[in-house]
Image (tube, rainbow, N blue to C red; front, side, top):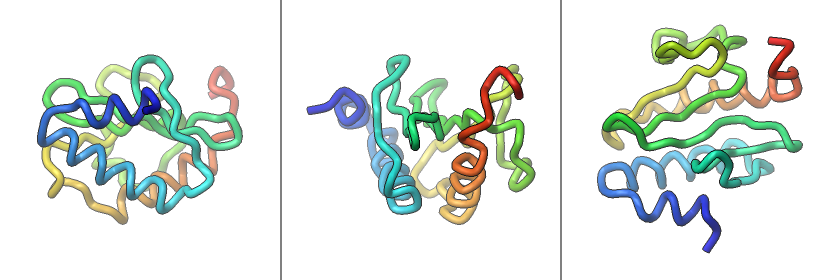
Length: 120
């Protein structure tokens, strides 16, 4: 088993179910994205550029977006918590996932994937 999938499957509930649901949505909307294991968390990459990561932390699942500072939609749902560039959606239960918000932000993350991180 690959490390990213192992990370997801070894999580306790409800985090495992949240991660599996997020994985399904991300792979449905970005079928070319590759699930890798970087910095000890699952990371989705496209064209060798980071799109988002999945992290269980502080009692929730964080979907962090590398290009978050460029987003203009759904800002009221994004958390930056002392992070300058990365913004994230936080989920405490599967029912918190709103597919259209996540899919809109995935489109934005994909659009900004080629912007160099330091140039932001």
